[in-house]
Image (cartoon, rainbow, N blue to C red):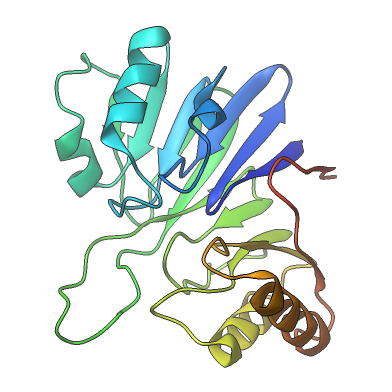
Length: 212
């Protein structure tokens, strides 16, 4: 399986001629959806989900299917029967040849004055876990963690402890578009040093790796 990071919180997964895109939000190039066979969206925030882009991709590809939580699904009405699938914690499904498990229910808290929204994390082929905007620890082994390294709802110490708790062999930085070069360097040094036993890397936008 080939993993490509695109922009802020988006990745493309490719295998056997099929393409799965996760969280193609506003800080990611619109081209992230080109050629997608299926899309997973963790939650409704604009850096993870842009309704107009998904509608355009669905119009361009009548076979495109989308899996997401209820709040996002409600914004995608009218795409046609069987194209948008509502999922929640504990669900499993097959998305164009990719086996997917759903973990988690809620977005991490930004501030008590800001209402929580739903958030689902996706574990793909038992290997790659995209938690969205949450620090959900799946109750099973994970090979590759997509690690949200910077957000209004987190601090670096929590990110480090989260990576340790998941215990994946590999972790790739995600959710990092709001950091400048100085911030990226600092986070990379701290997370890379303190995650203890995790092979941590930051991919640039458009960079790919092959997963075993």
